[in-house]
Figure: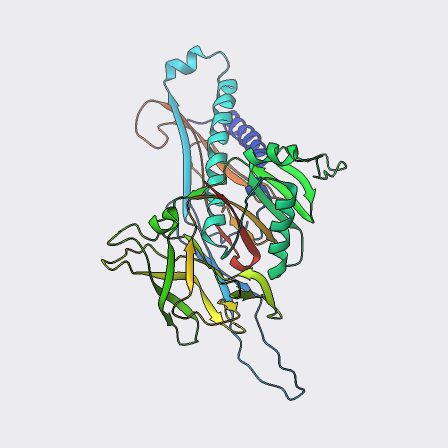
Length: 414
């Protein structure tokens, strides 16, 4: 039977773990916690799946006349779904507890290991968003300050949402960058909360490092560097290009194209239009692949776009481009890469909902009111499985999304 002292110890341990979690997890710390109070109907880790639709700003066009040209509006939404669950648990016998002169000290040590493990998995899950969502990318050719400045400029060239610009780059690139010259990262010396993953500001961007950024393994066309040629395209009812057939691929290959592959049109005249105002940008037409695709015996493969392309001024989520995609245009797919990110407008949405009590066992749930980071912890005999072991566990459910148009993937080719 649990005691009030057990409960207080679990609460104290949980507070310690939460503090460590926030200090370790830079991507989690920077994420937008607007939905930290996700619907309270989500109880326990069996109710994965509830979704909220986040409404994004409406896109409109304009006309050079005082005679109003009426247009319809399209509400652009992006879903946030609780789709990730994780736990870490240990067990030991009653004899182990008797022989341990300070069980709570032992619990704290185990708790430290748990938060390191859970924190790493939180970061890895959030870092996958840098691969899944942005349709723009910048291939980092060398680790220099000049390269970072160019990446920041390309991000802003397309249009950047107001607010602080944040970026995450691989930790192993930082020494090379600093070795190219005097340290250009400016740290806020008045901020006593500066954490180890914060590099500082440069080129109007807050740069952060991470060793949890994720790798995408490309299909054969990307790894082989094959140049593909557009054969035909398919458009939806609104006139947006949703897919294209290309030739020049490897033949009869089930791994020709992989979901989340990055590609671009090689023509220097094929450009994206800026997100608002629709001025022709300096950004090449780029795309993200929506699904795996196999090539046929003639070396043709169908590439489906995660975000459609629209020739002209787009009022939907489709990417506005300066010209139609026609037969004969050349396409390249990138090879394997590690993904960093640049984003602004606080677009990385995270929800870590409150979980139900583990009654009758001592348990505690804590959510930091400022950052929204959360974790649940439980302690007791016969917890989870009917046996005689004492158990200590930590767990959480979460969901995240990243607004596609607010971010740019930093590509580090492998």
